[in-house]
Amino acid sequence: MAIFSNKKKYATLSVTSDSVNDKKNDNKVVLKESITNSLWIKCTKCNEIVYKKEIDANNKICPKCGFYFRMSAIERINLLVDDGTFTEHDENVLSKDTLDFYGYKEKLELSIENTKLNDAVISGIGFLNEIEISIAAMDFDFMGGSMGSVVGEKITRAIERGLEKNIPVVVVSSSGGARMQEGILSLMQMAKTSAALEKLRKQGLPFISIPVNPTTGGVTASFAMLGDVIMSEPDALIAFAGPRVIEQTIRQKLPDGFQKSEFLLEHGMLDIIVSRKEMKETLYKVLKNLLNV
Image (cartoon, rainbow, N blue to C red; front, top):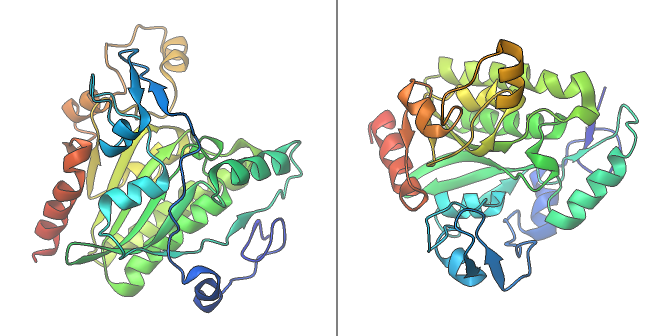
């Protein structure tokens, strides 16, 4: 059963060749303006009013207190990939309301209009210095970065491109979990992405997972925690279920900082916590060591 389309919204599955994408916009990512048009932003940590351009110029980090604002998928790719080297793939894969879930079509259309994206992930090929990588980045602003069939398909295709081109795969995750409007179909993406990563492992190609704030639910329970190296940013929320649900289930008070990246690093679930400004250079060093280049 097809639940996504490469041609138009809510149509059946049909794969569009790269030549069609080339005609559309030369298959290059188009930089888009932030949804927020405000000149000033109030930092949620220090409550200071900060000039938006100052935050943007500082890699979305508050210059007053160092708080990390959320980045879009395009900003993530621009942070990690060399300028002018990124070629987007599968941009026209669109979700279909297979279950006829109430209000889903309208929410999809609104998210597409607000974010200027077709779904909650952007994927393609780019270069990190001299290293060619297959990269995907999730966007939390698109329905909470929820993983529906399209997100799972695009992540899987990104992994398969790594296999095909014999290059490492990098995925930046930011998600609230599986997309409830697609029911069991969204949960199956956990198995599909994990199976693709097993093929990558058998071929001996590195997979670097970068879960950032927030990464939760089915994404955490699948590909986000299957990296050969798992990197994150300071104070990032990385979890499966929320702390309140866990406390109610086990009837115990959770420790301070539970589910934050520092806690996960201390308990062996993360390999590296690195500042956003050093993320690209650190990723390059990791890949260089893994590839022996």
